[in-house]
Length: 360
Image 1 (cartoon, rainbow, N blue to C red):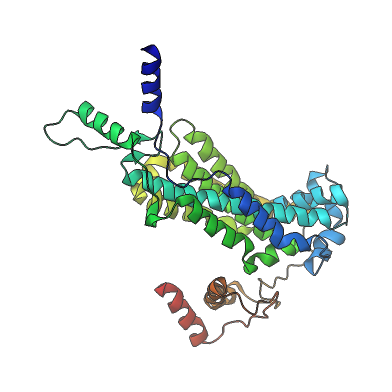
Image 2: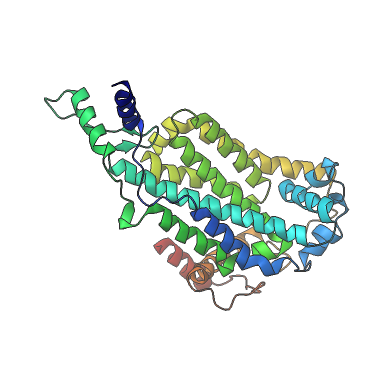
């Protein structure tokens, strides 16, 4: 009799498990990433690699923080210092690091997609993901306890379907695998110094993943939110594009978790204060660089390959660039390391692409 009661209690405590969740699927993502970039281990240093690695004396002493802190991307510089300590100028460790970062980003994307889809499935079935507590509404004339017992019993025997009739894990696998082997990723993986993009992308995804886990965790949410702030700060120290992370996280929260901006702020205001505070890393990096490694003269190409391009010209040119890369995401043909993209100087080359992006 006692064993039967224990068994009944155990069954009641078991939360429903979404259909199609296969634990070994991440191994396929790892295998796909290694297979796609196995031929890059012997790739030589090219272009900016020479200045940032071969001729960069500051990365040659791992135990001298001033060397890699004196830059706007200290996380990238630290990773290069670690690689130099391992293999000096032998390229294998640099490429191994880049591939590792890329594969980890793919695994993180897999986790985000799977948990987001499973979360929506649980909510549709009447289960709160945080602790898998039944989310029910008691009808008039019914006792809440009775309604709750009915809900628990139904959920205990229910198979929770994934959205769109496809298992969430397999959909997440397809998404992450395509992302890992997509040709557009080649530059950030095979071009050594472009790891700044890869690291920023990894920390961007980790920030979203930590927020998602925190929202679904009943007891460890604060730890997950703290992790999100840390990864956001690390992303800021990898590349300035990370500056958009707090805004994107808020949009993600409002759309897929909280349901409104007000509710997102009410539940996680401390998280957003921390994410906004992580912007300070960008300012700190600039100040530290100006003190420890003041540049003799600042000339920037702003990513276009032309000296003297102003920030406004850069911004007005971006709509055309964004549309081009969106097209390449769907059909990656005629890829090129340096497109020699012309600066947009006429209204048609500015307004038409901008209108296309707004239409999306």
